[in-house]
Length: 292
Image (cartoon, rainbow, N blue to C red; front, side, top):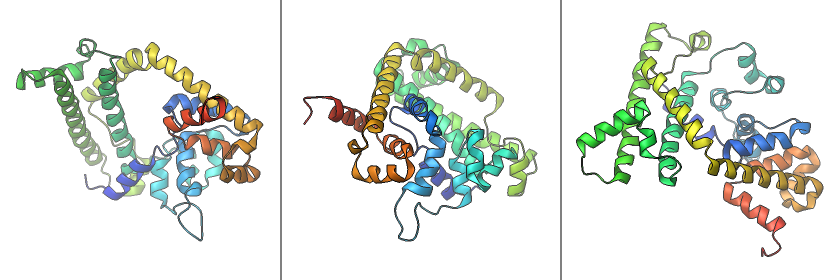
């Protein structure tokens, strides 16, 4: 597509750095915990990681990334936080589009998580092949795989189907986006900023993607086992936040010092930087009497 591949890669690698443990469930509860201290947004936290929290240079905090990388990381932001962002916030006030590289990274993210959620859902038994055969994009590719490999074991058949779906989506995205850019006569970055969204799927694939998203929402994300896990995640983060807020000395020394300067943002930084497993271990360290 003639885009800056390094920029696409940098945005893609950095865009989820601010995600909390337990995904969106963790983000929602941390936002609730932080409500009276300014709230929490994982997009802003991703930017905070690369602008402030990384400590790689003697002269300054953060990674000193260029504007275009930072713009791509900040997919969206609440209106109340726009004034804090300076030039980076102007795009949202003026309703300008981000770079093509940022738009592409956004769609790549969608392709990745939809298809891997299908794979995870099948492996965990939360959804079944029979259910997915009612979803057009999956059913079409599954039929193609069965026709080509009639005796393939089910696990490998799923892998091949998901891989084939990703291939179809990538090709469609490139072809449709290239047409969009050509039809819009885009020849400068300024033109990208003022144009409608230029990176996107064809109408058929867009419709099929929406059908797949709805299926995943109804059958996977709202599955009782997922809802139970989300409930445990909420409980874990609420308890950690409450414990650290009531006794700052429970925090690692580095974050105790940060709390003196930044208050509860230091607690949010600590929790947001945890993996699922680390958050669970930290919960056990604080609340399990048998934990070493």
